[in-house]
Image (cartoon, rainbow, N blue to C red; front, side, top):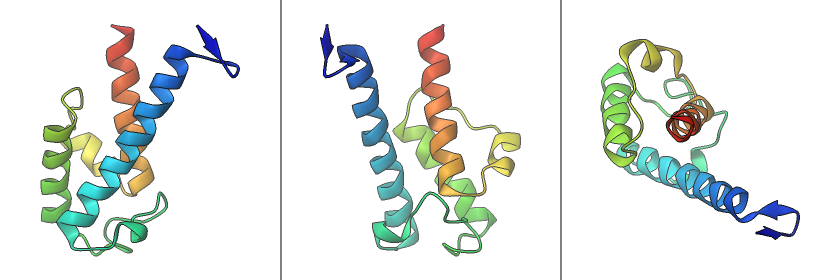
Length: 100
């Protein structure tokens, strides 16, 4: 079905993506004791949010627990430097799962 130029599937995917983004920001903010408004896409985990390597490791494990189709390897974690990097990684994992 098409509604407003988007198929129902596209709208559902877009809604899930917004929810995932919101959930990621909330998890990060809660864990680091920050206001969720500080957790912007361009926020660097270490430089802007004050997360050390252990914080980042624990956050990645929490994200894996929250998003069952996401598995973050050590190599992946080393490349995820900003909140936006993490959100794009999660969205990519969801797309990859749907393609299987």
